[in-house]
Length: 227
Length: 81
Image (cartoon, rainbow over all chains, first blue to last red):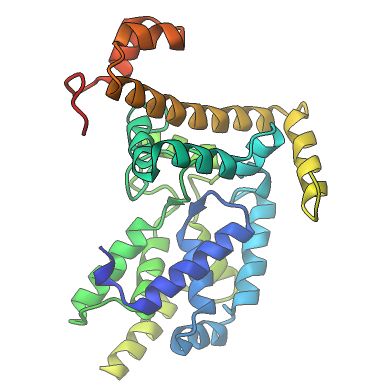
């Protein structure tokens, strides 16, 4: 799937992952991607965002506020930390079982456990629930898909950070939890995510005094100017 | 436990043992997510080594029907995917 996105997008993913890690979130969502875009070395998009009051520091402060308001999960929900509180070091467990059985067998067991987990319809890329042995759940699939659509619609082969921004903005137009099954909503509620009301990205953008529609129009104008 | 993170760990340990049901129940679900994967891993390993469902069920302290239903769905015994 990643050949549809250029290297700058992968760098944004790494930065977004770091942001999720800072907040101790067990998932990677569009709101983390927005911070990743604001940090990206691709100067175009990060400068574009900063000029509209969405620089990385402002976005980080905005995320912290959403955590304080209960829209996004608090750090105490981190599964690895909760298990550490019970005396279990999940990294050690993972290393131990991988030494005994090999990484492939552990991956396969994660897949099998998802099939009968009570939370099995969480909208992962791989369709599984968040076992603490897993990496972060990817909740940004729709934003990535929309980014690909945007790039294809513009006749530009690989999606870059600007396309990803368009995808994140389009995804944010719908309320949180749009198009999810009851089970998927339950999974998100388990992680501590609000399943109704405006999407976190919309809240971030509008609190900064910008609007989704204006940002989209300006991003598109920038993309047309470069082609 | 030593080093910079130990205070944080102690605080988290206290939080998990706290009486706040929200923290305690979330920790239980995380633990279940871990146990589920370890069970899948061990059952697969036992089957690969030729263990019968009955023997596996005995070790897991559940009925052989329960373990078969949970782990053998859609697969022929002994055939790995």
